[in-house]
Length: 368
Image 1 (cartoon, one colour):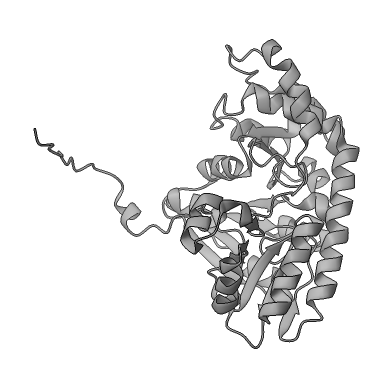
Image 2 (tube, helix red, strand yellow):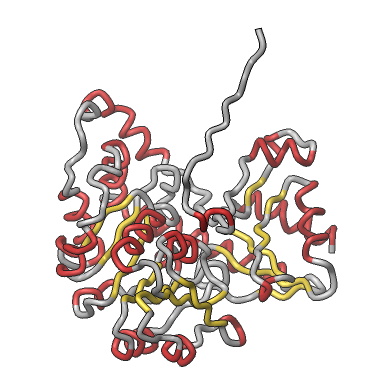
């Protein structure tokens, strides 16, 4: 008997035809197959995650699994997590919106602030998810190019605001350039722009001054943070927004009630009780970043940009960026290529474990 396929034409939104989706990272298995290597030879320097897995938290949770109430929904208010975060950051426990990772936090914010005909401003180049969530809501994204050295053009950001503007997205430290925005510059934007200001602090534990304390004073400030980076819980998916009580109440109107599972919540509780371990791993990562930057800077034809995060940019002055990328890929090293024209000669490097960093250094020296 033959098989028949019935095609049903669905009435999806017209903008989907031209929408530029977020570029998902391929898996280790996909990469290995594409270059003919065993998957064990793939070394990821493209993900910006911590190379340190918190195995002791996992062992603790493993021993508690039978006691976890997985047959029930989690506490919709996430009250225990909010108390832990309030202690960690020194702000009130009513100042948090809990989300399934930072990306869901951006999605929640966009649903509250954006709609057809309005605008969102980004400081470009930056994290592409700001564009994605804005365009999905029908907003136009206005890109303000960064200045020399990838510093935020504060004057340009302020001048770009008009009566259609609803949000300004800032990233500090910025992904992919590693820059931070100064407190005075942020306060100026908050004071002069009567719009929502989102500060993505996904990498803040690695460097830069946090703006969470300002959130209690400025109703237009929303700070997005995550457990995915310094805390080593990228696979568990947990992020949060810090904002004043009035803004939190509005954001919670569109927040999904149960998007964070009970296992992840328990991991977060253990993490907040063990912040010293996180700080030690951050220290180790920053030491490795300094060593990598120092050694790569000695290679002819490569410029290394300073960074306050657990990653940095390499600019290739004498070789084609894509040639270097594929030479490394054929040896199992995966770096991040970025689409922005301002980064056409650059690759982003996440700091890994010392042995992996040494192997990358050897490969770069050999290729260049």
